[in-house]
Length: 238
Image (cartoon, helix red, strand yellow):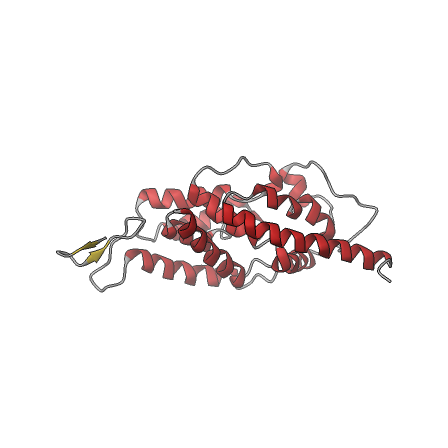
C-alpha cells in the first residue's frame, strides 16, 4: 500500500521504507543473509549456505501460494538453522546466538515473536513435537522438510552422516520405531536407517497442498534409491 504523502511503502509485515529508500524489512533481510552466511561457512554436513538459500526460496514461494506473510517466512527461513542444537554446543547456546542477533535489528515485537516461534517449533526432533499452528510456521517447516527429501535430501543425508562418522548401512541393525529426543540425536543408527526413522515419514507430515505435491515426487525418488542401494549392497542387482 503506498502513502502518497510520505512516499513510504507498507510491507506485509508492517515495516516501512526508510528515508534513504531502503526498507527496514529489506535491511533486516540483508543483515540476516550476511549473518547466516558467516555462521554456516564452517558447515560441510548439508547445513550450508546453499541449503539456506533453497529453503528460503521455497518458503517465499509457498508463502505467496498460501497467503502467508512473506517477510516473516523469509526471515525465519534464513535464520532457521542458527540455534539448531546439532550445530551448536547446546540448544540454549544457539538460542542465545539467535536472540543476540535479533536484539540488534529493527523489528516490531510481534514480528520478532513470530520468527522466534517458527524457529523454535519446526524441527523434527525425533517426531516428538506437536504440529505447528501458524500458517507461517507451516510454510517454513514444509520448505525445510522438502530440502530433506529427493535427490538433494539423499545427498545431504550422506553428507551429514559422513561428517558425524555414522556408518552407511548395517543389515543387522534395524530402524528404530520409537525413540526419545535424546535417542534420536545420540543413539546408534545408520544412514539408511535414517530414511526409515525420519525421511520416509515426512511426506505424510507436510502442511501445505503444494508441499505435499512436491513431497510425493521426492519421496518416490528416495524409496527407489534405498531399494536400489540394498540390491547393490546384497549383490542381487545382477
